[in-house]
Image (cartoon, rainbow, N blue to C red; front, side, top):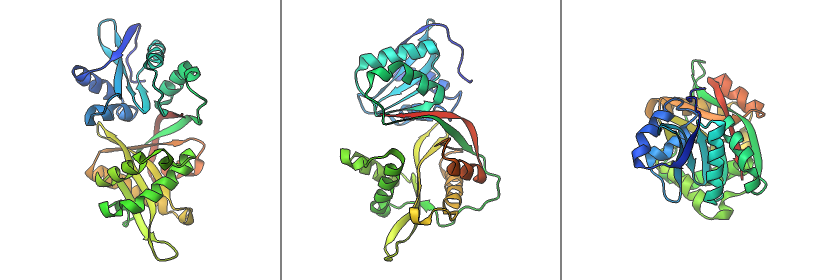
Length: 284
């Protein structure tokens, strides 16, 4: 545990003057805190914001990002009590809780009766970091998607989302497609391209940098076309993704994966990912 011991304190909204203290807190565990840290580096629109738990002497000891996603880090049981009270008073419903497992599940225990029945609870997800050193070669055809390939990435991203979450994200408006194109423009979507049976261009593999902060790039949205699974394409492509990210974007490459998804866990371990902690997700 990298977070300091706490006794009692208060919770409040954070502002610009709290930024340095928050960044110092996140630096205690950059991988666990990447989701909460990212808005501090990139900015965020209202009404999304961050709240912090402060000791009686004013020291900041925990932070939670509060928006469409809720991402808590560093809270003691007393801090989670205070955070739960704050979220109830905020009276806006998030779409997910995500972060270190003890934080997410501890918070969910305190606010579950305030929310509708969740779509799914994933209480144990392995938080992994790429160490490499396996000698496995990366796929030379895996690379950042070009802006002109955005329209091909969209259907692959939608297919991935439906498999992972269980519904079509475009049914709620254009936001998801806009997000896909934004990642492509930023150079944060990696693809291996190929041809479908009719000879048309298609995405065979994709992965995104879903969060980037504090020298950590968290890979999300990993997907291999169903026709090509079981051939080792995803393994070689992920090596290429991890190494390209380390070379050009961030020194630490992380991801999280459901512990029951044994084929994925074994693949990540085989190519050089190491478990460093546990995440949890509550899909609302």
